[in-house]
Length: 410
Image (cartoon, rainbow, N blue to C red):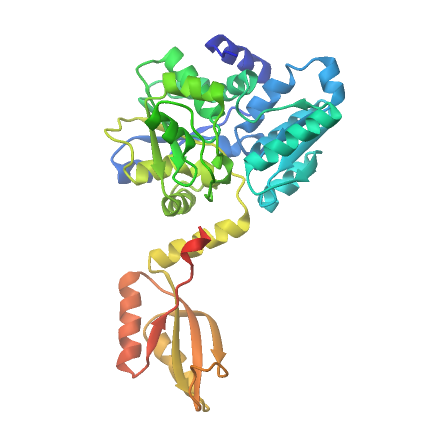
């Protein structure tokens, strides 16, 4: 199997009128903070919420009438599922999608709403992939690979053609890597048209197969994956993808889970865009100074925006805690009228806003005649938190900060 720039050009012609030409956004605040001209290719605004619809549509249009009649099947953690479901339903083709059992509910429901039959199986993409192969053999479906397919790669490569046309002065293109379809298509298109442009791929440290492959000089797989960036949580990249990446990608870097979470919040606050974990890794690499000697203008591909609202909520709370704008603390007050009121008055005098109050008198650590009080407070910054704690301790309260997250949560 091979992919050429001509394949990508043909894919663009075929996709015209079927997909959005997503905008390239610039945030002066982001550029000023990084001291670098930064642009964002907003594939989170694409149909079905990610770049995946490009490859899915290009692939499904390549099928014969017989293949279309048998229906299609795919395996996906979410975005490819939606792309295939949308592409298939637009042509009246039956689609079956195998997804990991832990796939985000928002992606699962969106896939069903696009008309696909969803089969949940296993813990990872790779488990769902094996199930899809079984069902394909059993029912004769046509398999729609999420990344290791020349038509899929060519479709994804149209992202880069738009970048080069809309931002001709670009010096560096940064994109996420999971199975490798997007990175392969982008790198092939960029290097074919502008070999002087640097191409950098980003992986989550909890799913580093392509990074490890680059380090070892051969295609390798990981035993497991663990990352909030579920769209790139792949144990083994595609062979065709790897061949193209090895030849055309200049650098591959890793970002940590905390950096991904911070990047999601950063883009929400600074650029007013919502991205999922996979869509945030490129910005995480810039914010974490992971790309050596980066030259601008830089275009970061925000690959998707299909993030579960519960994850957003956790990330926002976590970000507020890190910035000192939210705190949970525990203390004890006398178990008599006015005890809680006096505590809350002290907190108010310190300038904090009380979000939530919970009291507990039955735990073994609570002495008779005392009540444990847990407070959630809105604060201004980390220095304000220190001031509140100092005021409480000065009034005789024993205070403990309650950790809002356990390390295992990411």
